[in-house]
Image (cartoon, rainbow, N blue to C red; front, side, top):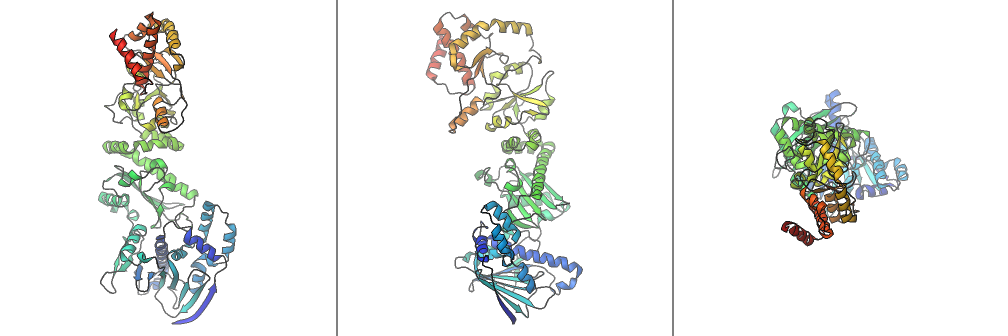
Length: 623
């Protein structure tokens, strides 16, 4: 029975704080259950620890648990635990610090900056008051494990709350929510079970609901033991794969995973997975909507923390991070950005890169499938993660003039091992397709000298390579840009350096003639070091954007300034010789235009006047 009743008024500012908690801090109203279950779990944890020193605290009720029950007629939902409980003083002190004198100082500290204010609120521990998101009245009854009397706290969340001392109550705490008129969904066993699975599946204590059709019987609806907290020696591959499929919503097995426990100044557990194929939900999300890395604090689900704990280029990772001491703000939804968070983020990045590296070494076929699926996403890291740039580059794979078809199988380390005597750069070419890259005239001279060229035809490649200037001390050189100095490389069989130089000097006349005929269509005309079979090719300056990328950006509506390319010619080619010998100025102009248009077509360009090109080509073929 009740022996003492006291009514206390909230401070004037409390209503403002309650309004902030119930309307601003929580993005999903259902997480009130997570908050209250988490508080119940904390109470059980405290009693479990206290019982190590005094086993009598457990009495005849040693099985620590959390129970959820509801009454549809009364429209109440109750969350009950048999944990440590609270005394009257502790209820006043701890149930929610917004009822304390610090409230005014807290409100005075608000700056109007939402991000800063949310972090400030995190110092005031008012998760309990999330109950008022769905309830218009809350009653709490609590008895400490070492006390005989209990206390009842009641409030409608507005002007005041009441405290009553009770002679008897079970050990622990029961929070009863008198639900608002439009919150019927929380009077459903199915809904409560769903929310437990979503937010509290891995709480270390049984969470129970009344068993359907059986008075007085309960069923446990959570796992009550987090897989990632179990020793690796106890877990089989099928355990890991089953857990992956449940958190990733993926029908396929994971390609690989890493499970680590870190102890020290900060303690946390990582269980990270590499998918073998893009999960279904990844088809509908991008860089700005990243999901898949779940953050727990002491086995309580807090949020999907992919954006906080993984860079965008690792957004394919799935898994769990469980920290023992990561600080949160009041809603447990927004992480405070601090040194501990950065340490966990760095550890996640390192473990994932380690895992990709290990997969490449131990399981090449799985690694290739992973690169086929996620290689382009990984390439973003070259631009975004300067600290790991070379390490990421080591994990990438490309097609090359030595590989079999368009499969991206060549690592940069493989390339370095095959460099010829005198080669000082890693050569590559970018194009719109594999066929265009493989057939690029700019790589002819390198091929003739036995030099491997990387063939890059993914849209991201040109952008990525703008950040990857070198690898392992070797410059990366686009063979379609700038001057190409091949003097230190071996000459193709049957060629003589002196003869090549003499031929280049003898071409001064035809260079001048072609440049005059083409005018402003080209920036310059010069003898090519690149060509052996083709008559001409286009070359850009070292820092110009590739022509095919310019076209992509223009098609996307971007304003890209036009860059006039250099036309390089092969003076020994029959078409160039014919132009040199052509006495008729009109026919010479047609031949010069044909050289330029052929080079443009090889770059994938759309000709301004295709009909004129066909006419010129037909005239040439007709003799």
